[in-house]
Image (cartoon, rainbow, N blue to C red):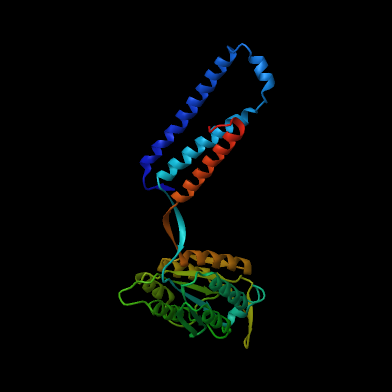
Length: 313
């Protein structure tokens, strides 16, 4: 937490001074009470008030002073706010290896479910595009704020062919700048999910370097386990993920890399990425919260003071 007017924090010094004055006042009252000749008779007829109840109004009053002093200092907290006109490209591998069932029910089905949830959780107004790829990019949905179009594109992903990651990233990078007003700058990011090594197409790391120059980070997710296999006309082949390639792409573009070996892990990764790419940190003044808290404490002090002593603390 930071403060726009920290000089007002000096008012907090009034709290310990007021507490000291209250303690001295209570001691003086007790000394005077001892001199009262009919003290025992008076104490017998007066209802006994627990010490905590006598002191509670003063405690609330001092707490109110402290909270209001903080409000005057104009505290600011860092909060997540939606990015204005953000553009996010979901680039999803739909090569034959995505039929592997090491991640149940299959890598592709888990990827589709997670992508749909990712889209659902994004703030309204975020532009979402979808690129599905195998040997070449074959499912291309240009960025828009229409979530239904993004969901339909995700549902249409079918697994077949090889893995042309670089070509898909190149298409996504081109789409990231579409729809931006002339002279404007739309914060963009690419979320790449893949399970295997690149087999065809242009070099992924070269595209990632171009993305970094364009200010478009690529966040990568390697999906699957080392036990993944698929059936092909040539027989059963192993299709382990390639997390090292995913890390290299993320590193070259300024993004982050993740590994998911099961459905819950992938959902957690997408939840984290959604917060990261669709929101930004911003300092917001929260003086009103402290002012409201101080007012409530003052009202509490007044209420308990009137109830226990018949006067304000």
